[in-house]
Length: 354
Ligand SMILES: Nc1nc2c(c(=O)[nH]1)N[C@H]1C(S)=C(S)[C@@H](COP(=O)(O)O)O[C@H]1N2
Ligand SMILES: [Mo]
Image (cartoon, rainbow, N blue to C red; front, side, top):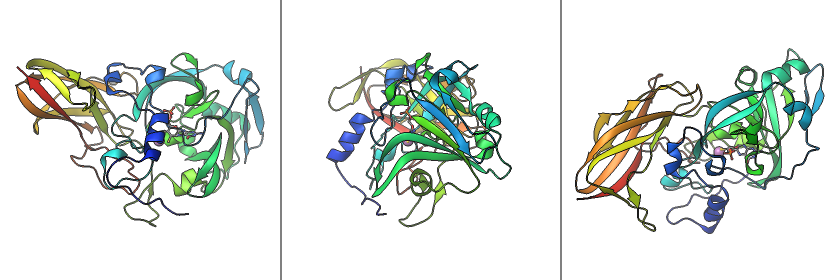
């Protein structure tokens, strides 16, 4: 398995193809508590697989009573709806140089949706797990190659994480059936974890008694500083925050233009570890505290705001969150070979006119 060589400089045609397929959330959509479905970011490694009414979900492996559920059986069960902020583990990769050849996210690989489905724990209970079970594997219906290895997209969770009551087998997003790009007709939703754990196009759930060695589990999604290192698996989302870009924008340069005077700055902050307690806002590296709202839901981003008295000239704006576990965003990206977990503070350059 060969790691792809890192890239320095302009984005390649392959990165552009991946980026147009896997669009981010436009940052002005930070204004919505729940991201409208069409604005929710996307990450699709291979092709969107076909699906129809005949879809079924198999539950097996080390269980006493394996079974399979039709889509109709699943959607007719009592369901739960939860608001969840998902962020791609590679969000921020495109800011780092050299960068890993993959989706070159800048800041926009994050969104919040309201997912409706059946708690996974209920399905596992019905299947009766054997005592030896240590992990639950989730198999997607999408298949492809990465670094020469052909595989279905599949990921596992440790048993205690899989049994949390807020892990859902979801069939609806924002009150409507899942759209094809978000995993129709069924997907896993794992709050607090980076997005890769939320397996889309879910066709099988398997209980096992050893560490899952599938490509997306064992080879991909590890924090590594150097080639060949075993690394640490990506799991919970690191504390992060974004600001909605102020003023208006210049079409091609993307530079922001703001009128001098009072500007209401706002944004969102989240962490998979604990609630966000503090958000700071900086103008030209001079930090002040913003007002952070209480969580709207246990696993959804929190809103924050602050007034900025904008003075004529060129300025750099930044924001930085701290969570209740005391974790704070770094000022500069922390090096990672694959560009994972970059939660460095966002910076926006603005021109203020009188
Ligand atoms: N089957 C399958 N599930 C998947 C993926 C995929 O490519 N195939 N991508 C994962 C990644 S890396 C992320 S970040 C989230 C993105 O979910 P979304 O596209 O609904 O925003 O889905 C995850 N689930
Ligand atoms: Mo991702």
